[in-house]
Amino acid sequence: WQDNSLSHPHFTNRDGSLKTFDFVVANFPFSNKNWTSGLNPAEDLYNRFEYGIPPAKNGDYAFLLHILTSLKSTGKGAVIHPHGVLFRGGAEAAIRKRIVKQGFIKGIIGLPANLFYGTGIPACIIVLDKENAGTRKGIFMIDASNDYMKDGNKNRLRHQDIRKIVDVFNAQMEIPKYSRMVPLAEIRENDFNLNIPR
Image (cartoon, rainbow, N blue to C red; front, top):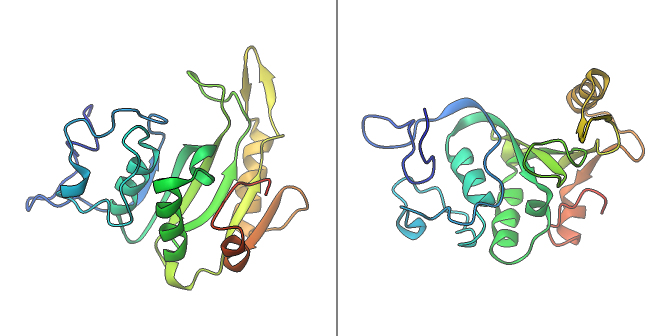
C-alpha cells in the first residue's frame, strides 16, 4: 500500500484510531522536509505528538512518534534513523528526552556509513520496546560501524557482522569499544545526548 503514513495512515480501526501492532520494522524517508504536508500536528487526530512536535523541516521524529503510537503496550520496533536523531538539539532534544524518560528505547545500534542507496550518511537502528518500559534502567548501545565489507561503491554488512549484532544485543553482552549498557543516570548527565561515541 503506498500513501502518506503521516497524513493518511492506512492502518486504522473502524473508530478511526490507529491500529496497534506487536512489531513494527521501518526504514522511513530520512529528514523529510515536508512531513507536515496535509497534516496539522498540533491537531493530530491520532494523538501522535504528545511528546512534542518535530521541526517543520525535519520529519525524523514524526515517523518515530507515529511508530511508537502504532505499537501495542507490549509492542517492539526496530527503526532505521539518521544519527542526527541521537544528538540534535531544539524540539528534537525535548522529544528525545521525553521518550528516553518513558523508557521506550531499549537499544541503539550504530551502523557503517554508505550502507543505503540514496545517502552515504551513517545510520542507526533504534530498538523500541514498550514492554516493561517503566522499569528500564539503561539503553544498550552497539557501535557496529567498523564491521562491514566494501561492495562496489557501497558498504555491506556480512553475515558474520549481522550475527554479531544480533547475538550481542540479545545477550546484552558488553564488549569494550563495541557494546555497553549505558545507565539512564549517565544519559541524564549527558543531557540526553545519545551519540554513540560519547
